[in-house]
Amino acid sequence: MFPQSTMLDPLFWMLLGALQVLVFMGANEWAKLYQLGMNWWKWALAGGWWFTLTLTVAGAFTLLGENEGNAGWYFLGFVGAFVIVAGAVLMKVLLMTRPAAKHG
Image 1: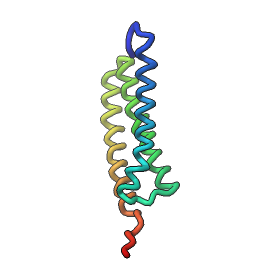
Image 2: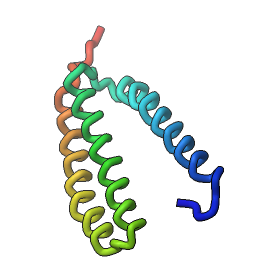
Image 3: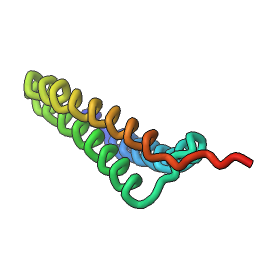
Image 4: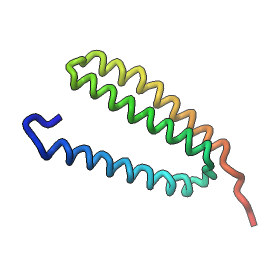
């Protein structure tokens, strides 16, 4: 990733890992804020979507790094569009299945 560098590659990947931790920690707070009533299957769907998104981005940029530019951009465009639409559907499902607000 960083030619002729022995320090920037590990630092980059450690920073990326730290950002993933912040995303996972923030997801629980976000779910509480919107009162989604998350349970095991909702977390499994959300985690699966996040894994698919990160795998799509990683795959596309790996292709770009291997000088397969067209394949990388097509992969990011087609698979990425599907993942974004799936995320919107997942968000709709999470909002539709949240528990009713308790008044009183």
